Image 1: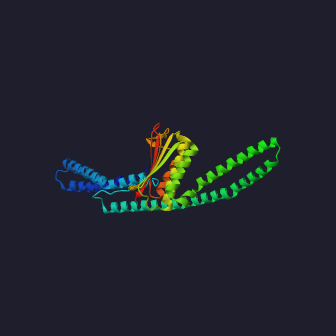
Image 2: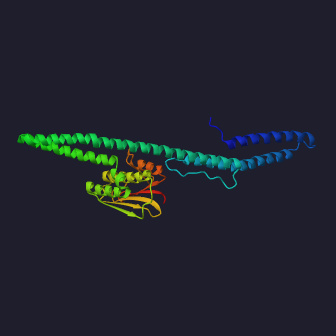
Length: 325
C-alpha cells in the first residue's frame, strides 16, 4: 500500500473530527427540536460540514505547498552542478523557514566536503603523475639510452647485412625515447613549474601544432593575477585535455586558445572541427569517455565552471570560467 501524504492524513483526521461533531450535534438537535421529522436542519448541517471540509482542504493545501517545493528542490540538487538552493515563500511558516535553512545548510556542507575530497584526489593524482613521469625519465629512458649506446658500439664492427637491422633497431629506440619524453611531459608539465602558466601554455600550444599539423594559436588578454597552484594546474589540464580531444575526434584545421584576465578569468579553446554529438541539446562526450566529465570535475574543484558550446559541423568551444579577480 502506498503511504498517504501528510495533507491526506491531516484532512482525514479533520474530516473525522468534523463528522463526529456533526453527528453529536445532529443527535442533540433531534432531541430538542419540536419538528424532529423535518430534515431541513440536517441538510443545512450537512452542507455546513462539507463547506468546512472543503475550506480546510484549501487552507491546508496552501500551507503545505512550501514543503512540496522543498521536495522538488531536493530532487533537483546535483553536487556535480552546484548552486541549487531552496527559497521559502515570503509568508512561509516558521517551521518551513527552519526546514529550508536546514536543507540549504546541508547542501552547503555536502558541496564543501565534495570539493575538499576532490582536491585531495587531485593532489594524489598529480603526485602519482609526477612519480610516473620521474620513473619514465630516470629509469626507462636511461635504459633505452644505454641500449642505444650499445647498438652504436655494435654497429662499428657489424657486417653490412646486420648493420642495416641494427640501424633500424636504433631508429626504433630513438622513436621510443621521444615518445617516452613526450609522455613524461604530458604526465607532469615541468614547464609549468619552471616557467609559469602563460609560457607553459604557449609552449604546449606550439608543440601541439607542430606535432599534429593543426594551425594553432595562443593569445592572452589582461594581466594575470596571482593564481593558486591548483588554479594554474586546472587551466593547464583543461587546455591539455581539450587539445587532445580535438586531435583525436574533431578533424579540425584551426585551433585558437585564448586566456583572458579582464574581469573574470576565462579560458576558451575553439576549433573548427566536426563538433560534438548532443543529447537533449547538451553536448556529450564519447560513450565511455571521461574527458568532458573530468574537465568539469577539475573546474568545480577551484570554484570554476566549464561550458561547452558545439553544433555538429560547426566546431566546438570549451570555456572555463573562474571567479572575479
